[in-house]
Image (cartoon, rainbow, N blue to C red; front, side):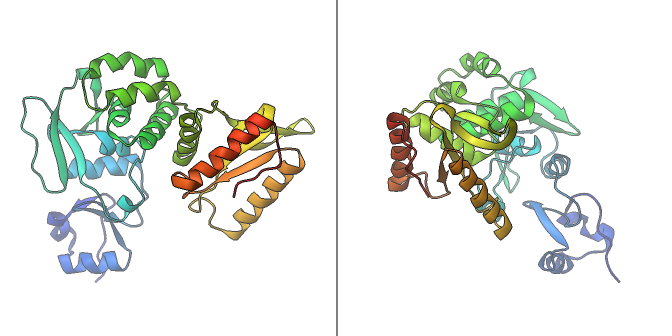
Length: 305
């Protein structure tokens, strides 16, 4: 007799309540009828992902007086800052307790104590989570520099946070590890960035000492806004776009991108395409040098990619 799966996340200890065994769970996962949300927390594959689902899963796993923080808090707030590999091998849930309390030792949870003000915590259902502002600040300290900027960009966009709001909190982080990075990245953050790799691309330009590009710049054709560019230097008619296979997998998407970029070149624009392997070593140096030459020499004859 088929098992009717619950419409919400469940733990191993809940299996008997709807007539499933551990072996049945393994078969359901192999058949893609069940997926793992967090370590030890599962849900029917038909249930769509959402911040609310993540919240319910975290509540089952930690609950009580612990506070979801860092990347787990970002995840609940709808900002996923995990790496691609971590979507296959789920990392521990990151939580904290207010200093003076004992961190939890629950399996699959990374816990520590932290100094938090009342305004740093929001209650979502039965789970306490660091606020969007506090989460952005913590990630600005903890993540690698390019990922930290991407997180700041996304929180500013998603929660209408200003650079001034972020900057006003920096004195509270005095002497904390990562505060120097946080302080340097806040002025560089921009809510107009629409993807993590766009943020990485912008930071690479800025770190090379180049002027900041315009974001989401519209190119008009016959007075009509026709092409929107990820990053642009309009006076030089130079566009820089990140081309990720994860976003352009279908042949039709590729063909559309090629046609779009060819038309931009016919309009006098130079299009430099940055891909996933272009952020380190010689490949990074290569496209950065071409941008520098184009901005310096007003040339439109070079192309990367």
